[in-house]
Each structure stands twice: as structure tokens, then as C-alpha cells.
Image 1 (cartoon, one colour):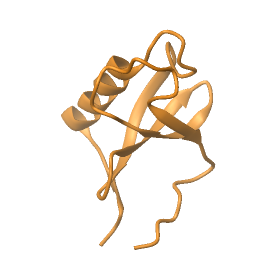
Image 2: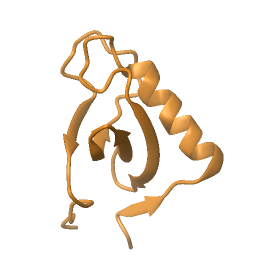
Image 3: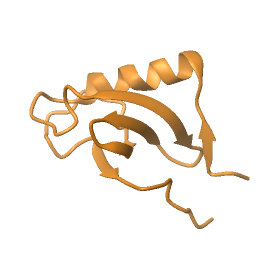
Length: 84
């Protein structure tokens, strides 16, 4: 079973809205345009195309964050391989 799957339509819009809701104004991704591309099936990681920056994997927390460390993110060249 694939660990990453594409997101489309209303799911993509929902994930983009969740990212915006979680980001504090001092988070490095705050204010950047982000388009949801894929999500992991085994955790809360979502791949976004972030402008400027490129492909970014973000671990959504599904809560309004009080610290700048969350949501955790990492810019990558491609979606990481996941060992199952």
C-alpha cells in the first residue's frame, strides 16, 4: 500500500486552510502561498508546494499552535521514502 497519496479539490483546500490556521505570525512558513499536493496515509504529514521555497513536508497538529516550533516542516527535493 502506498504511504503517500494525492489530495485534490476540497481535501486540498481543507489541508491548506488547516496549515494557515496552525501557523503563527513568527513561523517561517507564515504568509507564504502553500498548495497541498499529497498526504501520508500513516500520519499527519502533508506535502505542500510552498512559494517561495518548493516542496515542503509539514506535520500538521490539528490545533492552533502556541509555539513557533510547530507545525514541524522540512523542505525536500522529493517525497521521502517511507519504510513500512
